Image (cartoon, rainbow over all chains, first blue to last red; front, side):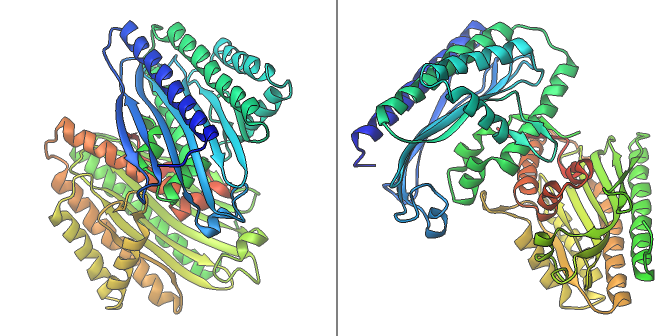
Amino acid sequence: MIGLDHEQQAARAAFEGLRDRICATFEAIEREAGSDAAFDYAAWEREPAGGGGGVRGLMKGRVFEKVGVNVSTVGGAFAPEFAKSIHGAAEDPNFFATGISLVAHMANPHVPAVHMNCRFLCTTKRWFGGGADLNPPLPRADDSEAFHARFKAACDAHDPAYYPRYRAWADDYFWIPHRQVHRGVGGIFFDHLEGDFMTNFAFVQDVGAAFLDIFPAIVRARMDMPWTDADRAAMLAFRGRYAEFNLVYDRGTLFGLKTGGNIDAILMSLPPLATWE
Amino acid sequence: MIGLDHEQQAARAAFEGLRDRICATFEAIEREAGSDAAFDYAAWEREPAGGGGGVRGLMKGRVFEKVGVNVSTVGGAFAPEFAKSIHGAAEDPNFFATGISLVAHMANPHVPAVHMNCRFLCTTKRWFGGGADLNPPLPRADDSEAFHARFKAACDAHDPAYYPRYRAWADDYFWIPHRQVHRGVGGIFFDHLEGDFMTNFAFVQDVGAAFLDIFPAIVRARMDMPWTDADRAAMLAFRGRYAEFNLVYDRGTLFGLKTGGNIDAILMSLPPLATWE
């Protein structure tokens, strides 16, 4: 893919760098648990040729039962009927997008699953979006509070209005209407962050840094806790709800599935094993 | 629920009778396998009171890892915006529906999973719909051919045009676009079967009889076949595809989830255990 401008190059490099640090940290956690699990990376190209592509990283370890980290940088033109629904694309369907997306399903039911995503979109508008949410099968108030506190700190350093707004947005988004429950204990969700590139880019990088700071800390605190068959069964049922959310409601998943995206990358988010009793 | 007319009463009674015969046969198969598994039945009522309800039957056995059989008889008025999309409801949103729905996920990967459904709908129009499809994790041509042959015989006894039409309809319907595969090896699917009640009612009862004839025969022929860990793993991955179809595409599932249906009855179709590698 050719012709990225300076902002697009900077965003892509930041997301790839974040991916590298996250994957190195997750592999280090595996080694601490006595495993030599490592990420496998598979590159994919968007059709038609020249539309960019991405790299899907996948690790199955002792602590991380299944974790996927995707980075992708793609461009092209939205289909006319679809362009109308995208910010800034109604008058011109050309777009560029670069982003990182991560979902981790953990072996130990006491370790929360997690999702994190950051993206930079360009149509006739340019904006960042992203977020992270914690999905503990067996929720603990201290983990939930630590997760939220760390993202609140990242938000507050940029704008005191961000955390309350983005936390509420996550609560709205990660909701399973047919069960009337949230899919996890929330986090932050933001989109259409327009305006000064460097200001917003700094915020998004801090969101990534917050994730890299808090999630490994929670994993290390919980990964050696003993668990029972009942804990494991509760986790598998919890994962069924997670799959329901992603397949029925998640806009990114449905957008990908219905527009011919890379299936392996899109469905990387689904749990390795799930139950419906 | 009060005020069923003779046709509605007859359809309901036929579906409940079919349920009774199917459940007795499935329990007999469990006993042949040395298990005393039996169906648990849970009644539910549609809100608001007076809107009817149903009975969800669920069995977890040695042969049937999870099988659900729902019968429901409900009535009321569709929401105005929804009524427009329903045959015969645009001018009058009142409706009545009675039906049976069955999904079986089997313990042995050599035994196909199966789905069967029959329903009678009344708006300002009255029609039957239904179908059945076979979902073998490890497909065998002989089972697939026997299944299709039995439904072809049921169709041909009523109208030689039925089987080719309804088989093609099933192929269209049970298709997973994002994977470009069918969810199984097909069967029949039909809807909006209007006209003479007794003629169509006889056909639908024969569809139920065909199911009761062929599926237990396939189960009994395969249930004692040895299987490997790889066979079981293939089945769990196959079930992931099944869950994807039901949660992303199945109209009945999405209609139920998004209109406040009985969650346990709607999601009974989901597999007991599934994997996404």
